[in-house]
Length: 404
Image (cartoon, rainbow, N blue to C red; front, top):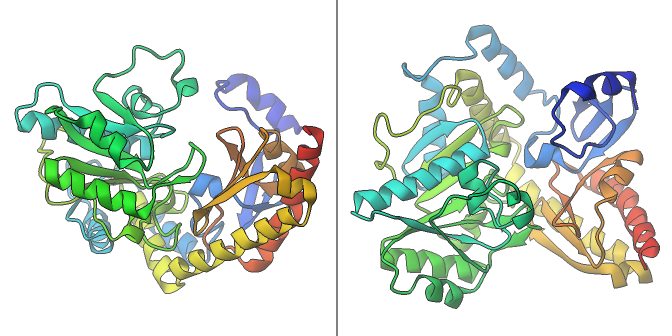
């Protein structure tokens, strides 16, 4: 552990179970720590660094923006907001956008939209359907919408007004809402991230869209982690051919610059009026430039199709490497996800892998206790995927042997 880390750690709140390392700089899908050790990045800052590190087209654009204006409050028009909003509307088939700074803020805004939608219809106590194993953030409201009792513990009383249902079970959803006139929205991640990389099935997505239309509910789809090209389409729900009414975004939209957005369709686009919602930093010129340039570069470099192809290659490589070992084959429960959002579920808890992989020069995360999550930059190559697999799988097999 470096002297820098030892000196800094006493003054930072103890909110993260950190690996004892500090990153210094990066290039593409590779990072170096302050001691000069290199790492292959299969985490992408948790699905944030869409274009990798030090991208030759992104960095000069941000430098140019820094030299002009970084922040302008929302008392005034911000031209970049109009440009980025128009692009997100074009890509999503929706109609209006509100900009904020994080996924939590975007999800909080979505919950407020759902409540006001209900109040505007004369519903005094609006209720929102949410899901088991969901994760929408750590504010009191988004924590209440989250389906994880461990992260909720110690923060009660939670916000009321949520109905929780299991994933991919349309009959359970119908039963939980039958005759309830207070329901205003259904809210979920297309692919649950923190919950263990759990995808919604295409037919289920279509069924929920139909149910929302029949009941005049808002369909609100959290694309914070699985959106922005990660699955091979701009937004993961597009694989089902549906369009939501509300879509929170963040993470990969700015390639590392903090940015969040709520994209709304016609049913939700005019719910908020001046004074209903706001933000100081949201929609600032630097963040808007980051979003504009990220999308432009993604289009120029064909990163959607690349993400789909590399995701297929990644899953095949992981499966082969695990099946080549009797221990690996027995210890593998499932490899799931889409594009470059991949979860490899093991039969044993594997939280130790985050630190062990870092020691060997690989950055990954473990979520839901048994799921190795990989959400690398969308520029990752086959050679880099091979490197990830070559480091990861021996460590997985070693851990499975220890826990046998």
